[in-house]
Amino acid sequence: QVDALLLAGDVFDTSALDVTRLTQLAGHLARLGRAGIPTVLIRGNHDALLDHERYGPLDASVFLLDQDRPTVEIAGAALHGIGFAARHVDESLLPRYPRAVPGRINIGLMHTSLGGAAGHDPYAPCAETDLLAHGYEYWALGHIHRRAEYRAGRAVAVMPGIPQGRHIREPGRGSATLATVTRDGTELQTVPIAGLAFQTVAIDLSSAGSQGARIAAIESALSGLAEADHSVAARLLLSGAPQLAAEPGLAHELAERAAEAVPGVAIDAIRFAHADPSDAAGIKELVHMMSEEAATPGFRDEAAELLAAWRNALPPEIRDTLDDADLDDLIAEGVTAVAARLATGGAQ
Image (cartoon, rainbow, N blue to C red; front, side, top):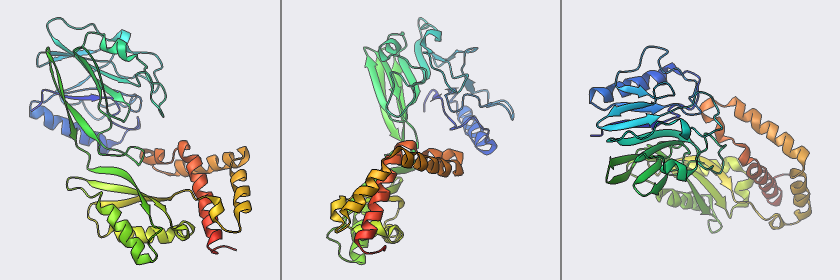
């Protein structure tokens, strides 16, 4: 029972056409239109060059706003938006937005990094104070995948975050924001909608002396993640069992057996807490030398090339699961695994 669905860019993760997903989107938006719910959207940096109408026009209830048509009126409100016309926009789009229409509730859609965010390049940067002073009652923002709210007087801006996390660096359950906008103020409600949430869980196995005890400990930790209304993909951070760090295949087997007993929870990946090289009796100096070698520019360059090759081998929609920001962690985990293997006598 809403007046409109607002999509503030990056409906798709790429500008490359996927006919199946494009058709699915068009069908769902048309279904909303038949229910009297129009859709207003803009293009973001990922889908800036996507031709939504390549295989026929969108439903009449769908309004794609851009520089040529920046405003549409719906239910007594003026909705304004200017999407990306290129993959990267490095200047503020706010000066191009129309002035607030007198006598109307004014709502803006903008794809922007605002003042910047960790892990994100600046896209259509815009000062929060300037945005909220533009005269609109509400701003629906896109780009940053973490939810945030901004307020100044009666003006409200919401970065609703991503509705469905794509990997472990987007943890928790994605949501949409239900905004009730009036001239007297705006009420906001976060509506969880993701069918899958990514979570990291740390498990200490130091007191689990047998394989059965380790399975039970992992199962107990996973049981605390189970939810009735969505599934969970768990990344395990294991400590206290150096022999598992030396035998990652065994660790995966134990984790999968534990997950079988917990409905709705699956294993995303397994990581091992970085061990102190001094724990590896008799090989401290060797591990120290490995750590020094792993920190050299030549080693890091080769590791980065290998990481890039792995990433390029993945389907485009999941390539950022292997990010350059993970390189140091992956190298450290590799040293930990080798140290554990040597310490347990598993390698000569």
